[in-house]
Length: 396
View 1 (cartoon, rainbow, N blue to C red):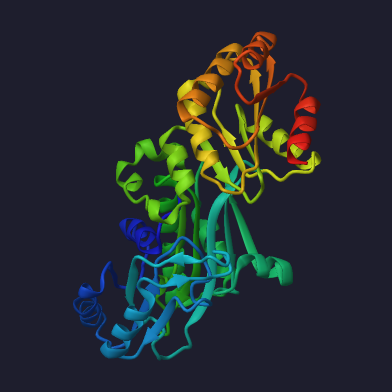
View 2 (cartoon, rainbow, N blue to C red):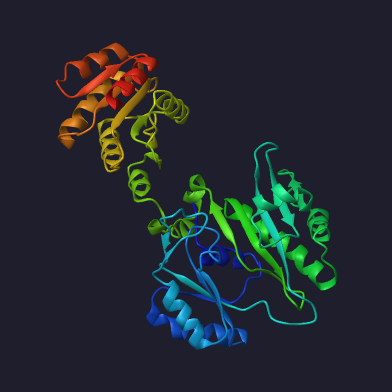
């Protein structure tokens, strides 16, 4: 589950990770009071106004502005709140900005120039260990750093049996060139960040930039945290951070029906039981000359209710020209699925696109018979190639 920057920073602060002082604006009537509050807490007129959306590259799209005073901050807040922010990660359609984060300016002058670093913690599935990634090239996309200057990325793997060790935190801090006060702050920062990552069951914590201020403080100037959906039952407070306005409405509806759904850009809707079979189905659609319109896994317990919910979600996509249902009858019997398809079809009413149902496994022939004798505009298939050929026919 993705969360906003301000939510991620609220998690980090619980574990002692230093962040800039800041508060959230949800409507313009709050803007003046909140901006003044941040100015009072920081002792500076300068504040940063930041759009809160689930996408990176906000600054490139005009969603992050440094204001010199209250009047300029109000102007930026008025411009950004409610805008359709387009960034390299949102696509051309962009995302509407519903909230702003106003923070203190941490790039103030001092004895040294502020320095930006990158810091990330995630699971390395190849080694089954958590890995800390750090770089002196903060403020840049880590993918770009990896491509152009991979030698500037430091990696430290954590043995899950013992956790993060003191020497490892120091090793990463030294690799970033931290010294004196900033070294101590950096080690403390890394420890706290690791604790926040593990305790919140995050799949990724990314601080970009991690800032060394002009007076050697180490702060999370920006942050991105992804939480493990499968662990949210342990974190009721974190589950409440979900912002459905940032998610695809189809995917929100699918989640409410216990369906695994991802919208794609193709023209053939697919409904499958099992993630692996869903991937194979998308491949066969591609080979047949079509393009998959979605990934939809109804799970091993497919029934009339889930099949109907899947139909309704797929049919809301105007690009869908045909639907391929591909079911392997292992846990669930094919005849049961076939009855579910027929029942769902009747409940929905007239379905304007052709439907191909491929059933294989337990009671596959019985399921095909139910489909063929239903009198509905549904074509059955048993062999996957037959299903692909029939998709190709209806798409012609």
